[in-house]
Image (spheres, rainbow, N blue to C red):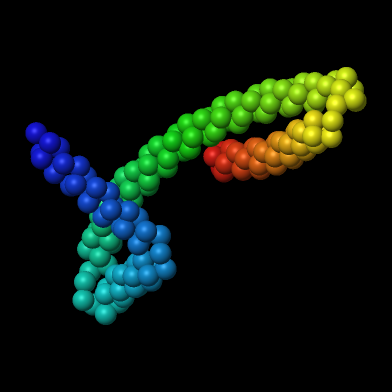
Length: 176
């Protein structure tokens, strides 16, 4: 059963690649040149008496109608794939927003904890003025660690700000 599903998927993937190639070619300069040459040739054939003007118009109109039908199908396929991609991007942006909100909450909690720890350290330092130099050195190291943690938190806040800016850019692109 999987073999059949895999074969079907491979065929669909091949068809998608072919249609993508056709859509790319249709929107290219070489396509413009080829179409211009075909139209010019079609209108020159009656002038040289090789084909009757009515027959040329009939064939040209029929070919152009068929081409227009296929182009409409290719364009709709492209729009459908773009819409799927946009929906995926929306989901990703929503997940990123949720993650950023969680990180902001965590940072706020950590900041509060650091403030509490710093107050405790200051209280301990005031109460233990008579302690030996080793104890004071430990307190200084703890304060230094708190300062380092605050610096790291500031860096994290900056990174979150960058992520929010990136998220805003993704939203702008999504609106286009």
